[in-house]
Image 1 (tube, helix red, strand yellow):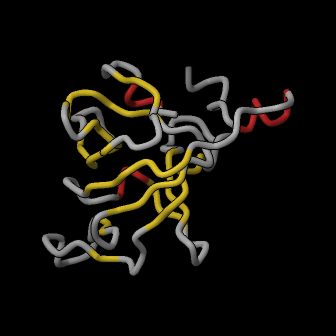
Image 2 (cartoon, one colour):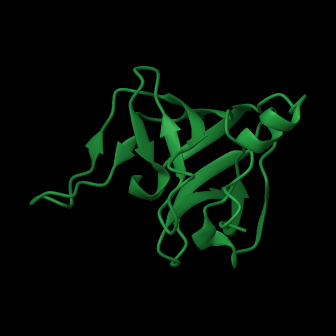
Length: 137
């Protein structure tokens, strides 16, 4: 899904094969945009698998902010975390080693491809797990 701070940005759901780019939308968050239209936010469902062109880099929050810290990972799974907390970012990536990183902490301009979408929910419980918290929308 798209984080609550992207509610007023033009968006569409992700599709397999979509080429994405990380972008600061100027709304207080970063997210994925369509590579061909960086004003179009691409919303991911929890469980969506991504492949990055280079190791994923996150913002450096220390003294040397101009140097983004790189992970060793080229793949990640989209997750939503802290859904019970209001007014915090929920969109995150989970890497193969279990590390979780908020999408809003990614460096801008990173290229990714949607490899696989999660299966459609088969029950109410699965459907709720793929939806943002009630207060987000």
